Length: 204
Image (cartoon, rainbow, N blue to C red; front, top):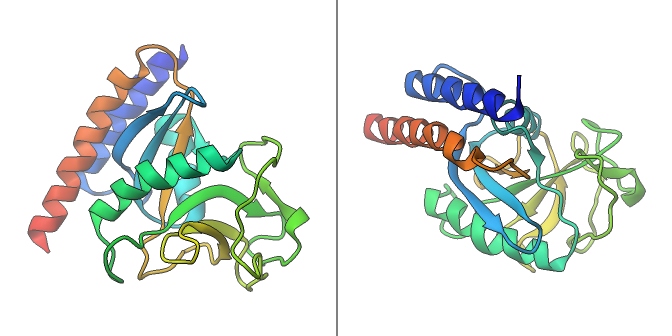
C-alpha cells in the first residue's frame, strides 16, 4: 500500500471518528501550513496530552510532533501555528495557548533538569534550543516540552507534565513532509475535525 493510499484511508477514518466524537486522540483542527524554508507542512491538533498528540501525529498524518531546528523555524511555528491555536481560545485568556513540541526527556514521565537528556521524537539531531530561564527544571512528573505562549519570551520552551497545562490547552504541532497530492487527501480529515469542533461548541 502506497503512502498516499494509506494517508487517504487515515483521513477517511479521521472524518468518521471526528463526526461521531468517539475517539480519544486529538484530531487536526487547522492547517496544514507550508514553510518554504523547510519544505515541510505544519498542522495544529486539538488539545491533548503529549503522548496522545504524538500518537495522533503518527496515526492521522504520518508525521511527528514538530522538531525545531533553528530560530527561523521557531519564529515560523509561533507566528503561524501559534496564531491558529490562539484563535481556538484558551481558558487563561487570549494569545497564551501552548504548543507541544516533539522534544522529551529520556527519563519521561519523570522530569529531568539535564538538558542532554532531551531529544527529538523524530530522531533528528538537536541543533537548536529555546529554553526559558531555569529550564529544563526537571519537574516530577514531567519531561515533555511545550512552547509556553504566555512566557517571557513568548513561546520559550518549558518541560512539563504529559497532560499539559489545563489553562493553556497544550495543542500538538505536527510536522510532515508529504508526497505530492497529500494535502488533497488531508482535506476531508480537517473538514471532519471542524464539524466536530463546531458541534462541541454548539452543545456547550
